Amino acid sequence: MKAFYVLCAVLLVFGSVSEAKFDDFEDEEDLVEYDDNDFAEFEDVMEDSVTESPQRVITTEDDEDETTVELEGQDENQEGDFEDADTQGDTESEPYDDEEFEGYEDKPDTSSSKNKDPITIVDVPAHLQNSWESYYLEILMVTGLLAYIMNYIIGKNKNSRLAQAWFNSHRELLESNFTLVGDDGTNKEATSTGKLNQENEHIYNLWCSGRVCCEGMLIQLRFLKRQDLLNVLARMMRPVSDQVQIKVTMNDEDMDTYVFAVGTRKALVRLQKEMQDLSEFCSDKPKSGAKYGLPDSLAILSEMGEVTEGMMDTKMVHFLTHYADKIESVHFSDQFSGPKIMQEEGQPLKLPDTKRTLLFTFNVPGSGNTYPKDMEALLPLMNMVIYSIDKAKKFRLNREGKQKADKNRARVEENFLKLTHVQRQEAAQSRREEKKRAEKERIMNEEDPEKQRRLEEAALRREQKKLEKKQMKMKQIKVKAM
Amino acid sequence: MSSNNMSDPRRPNKVLRYKPPPSECNPALDDPTPDYMNLLGMIFSMCGLMLKLKWCAWVAVYCSFISFANSRSSEDTKQMMSSFITLSP
Image (cartoon, rainbow over all chains, first blue to last red; front, side, top):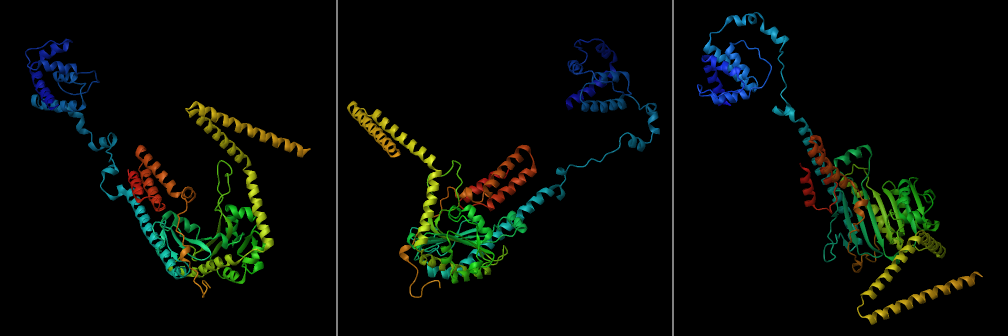
């Protein structure tokens, strides 16, 4: 580019000297190599690259007009360069002509600048500035993240302290009642770990075992999600409590067959909908416990009146009345199988496994704003749990009650079987077909022809026998009908 | 009240080991927040990368933080760290 520019400047100088030569070039379209000029070859290039472009008004001499016309199609830069070259050439070759610029001096510069070309101050784009303002989004976001992380650490620590406080206050009672306090299932030997299992930043488990009457007790401390800022903000709208859930698995021989629940009305309604056993055995709505001296906030769900009578002895009533604000629900059941399972393919083929269980859900006082010392308030509730375990062992239904309970269970099972009858039939049919297919395959695979024949005969005989049996049955039914 | 003064209710011979509850259906039944947040984070980070939207990328970072805070401890820390790093672009 620079070489080209220098070249053009040199050429202009030559052009002013040798006018005629340029005239020749102007006339002819096909250019002949002009030997006079060392740079003739370059002239071709120059002229070929010329494109038709609008005329530029330049007040210069003719010969330079020609040169500028020839070179009009080139880049603006080059034109600018040319202009410079031109003016330079001008000043070099000719004196400055005052007459050319007569009209210009009178015009005031400022007005022209105002009317024609107002100077606009363009804003430097933000990313080219080096100030804080250009990063305001980033700063905002990072501040938010830092706030989240701070809340995470604070929340995690608080939950951990609450759990430890709970354990410290309950440790003695638990150790006096259970051989194994704290087990995560990973050790080879069954030794007490003596500490809580941290499942989550907000859930702590404790397994206790080795006591008369029960197989074991699983305590789950379900704290609020203090480590999640979103949750913290949501809780500001709707206060929720930390919960302590206790699940005692009873030995089969240590608990009689009944289903019973007591708790806040809202909790019982929810449990009745969710829990398999409560929905099947306790079909009535939760009844008020005022008859037994319970406060109005608590209601009772029971399989039969006798169970309620048996359960609501003085001590239990005392517990329930005194700590009613902390009790969410108490659920005793011999048919406990967890919440109802929603299956897409319809009913499950067999009844879910049941276990004799006592479930307790307690609310930690403070409704979210708990302190470690509040955990001590839950100690009497643990006493209630222990008392309930012993009571469940002692409480037995009388004969009538037992009969009723057995009838209920049979009824539930029958209903279940009816519902799944079709499915079970299909399942049995498919199983039979599978067996036949497997046998046929075995016969086919048998290489020895003799064995094959024998197996085939055996299969035929079996089928014949089945047919005969069916026929007998049909005959019997017909006879009975008659 | 809690234990008979005469006899200790503890029975060392009847100790049962802790069996963690079957985790086939439980993770799905329990709080699905970490899984949703993980998915959202992935989606937003892809959007932010493809469509060059800065706010998308920031939302993705927030989603990954929330997913981490709500996660169940059964998942490896390594897995979470790796998922967090994939979200960082």
